[in-house]
Image: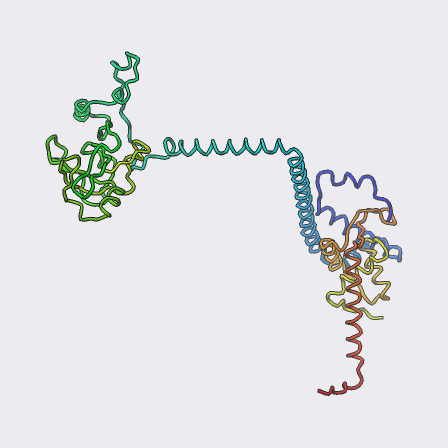
Length: 294
Length: 116
């Protein structure tokens, strides 16, 4: 075998070409055979025809060659890719082992960064990103007052600065044209404002007062029983309460017979109108983190 | 001598053997096999080249481009270490096989029944 001609180095400058390689190889075979036939005394044209006849199905062989060649190129490329990858990986690990201090600091920074991101995202996801768990949540709006009297004084007015009185709320309801419905709840509640008596030990209970159309407007259907009736929403009307699902489970053992019975909350007798579904969590939606029992 | 049909599975070992003396291109391999077997075995192009490429893929051969005797670029095949090992194994297996077949076909009498 003679030396590899110099141009061969550049023949595949733009990547390997298995098809062309196969062509070159088979053409050489044909030419060599023609040469031999001519040397035996054949006339060149006849020699070419004879060589082609002997060769048989040129196209079929070519296709096999191309397929095999492409496969081989792929294997080589894959091998080179993973070889280089392994080299890089080993180099990186070696360097990291050598520079232990740097490694520790880097890992710490990464860990802190990831932790901080995770923490921030969990909060942002629940508070800002996750849609409110109500039907057509996009149509809900929050009305917040900006009472001039407070803002002018430049004081932090707390809840009073951004809420409306019951009179104002009723006025809104009467003259409402912009919203399908307006509802309200009493935001001035605290933890364990109420006391449940009458069934064993007195129990502290957290509760919030809501307007009569509060639950229907949000599309919340009681799991058991009914919503507040019209009379129950009138001032001085009969008192009624809806139990939260978890309070119902913990305090009354999930007894469905509780619906319609009377309980005593802070010495006020009231009727249990129904039980709210587990999906509705006042504390989780309006005041995240606050637990609401009734 | 009359032409013989190539028995399946023997082409690979014939190619490996043809390359035992050094790198050759495909055309030279057919010539070598034909001359060595006194024209009894004629390897057709349609089977030779696919077999070469298959052996190359299995890493029993490696290929390199070079110039032929009359200055044409040709693809030369060379045995790899693995190919050489394979050739030795196959040669042994083939010889054992050929002796066994020869014994059987050359038999002139039924074998003596073994005492059981």
